Length: 205
Image 1 (cartoon, rainbow, N blue to C red):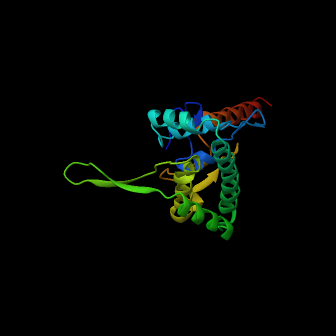
Image 2: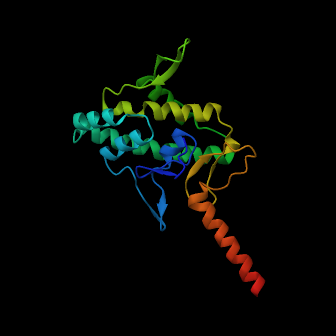
Image 3: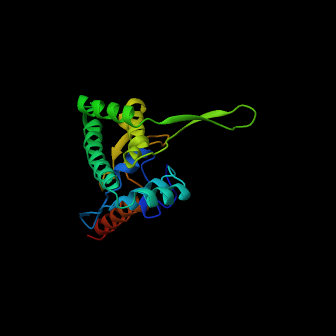
């Protein structure tokens, strides 16, 4: 999902896709990687910002798991999954292929940490929605694995790209499909200002 200010509770949401927003949790600032998921509590805050957990659920899980060995392992495993996913997305953007090892990893995660389905009230005819019910810290991977699998299975790879000026990824949902920047607020305005300054420099020289 995309938020008007690009940032929500200290996290970037410019990807138009949950898996891409997760990959974007380690942006670069002043030439240096900036890890946003520095600890397990930060990971839970991201899940809340991404609207995967409610504030009440986030607080309850933090109290239940904070400081545990399972929480530390889940945090480490999710960061490793993020970097594997980043590498695969870069490969996919370049040559449209997906490694069998990534397919195997996602299938394993989907089987071990499945999403659930429930009825959702919607007027006279209820609909269905996916949700997850984390019983242990490792279950936090469920919506991320599901989103990554859906991305590779259904998204047009020509519409998934890395920003021309930073490391952030996004799914271009614009009508023309010509989006080049992670967002106008971040790289877009900087690019336009730089282009304007270059035109002024050429005009005066």
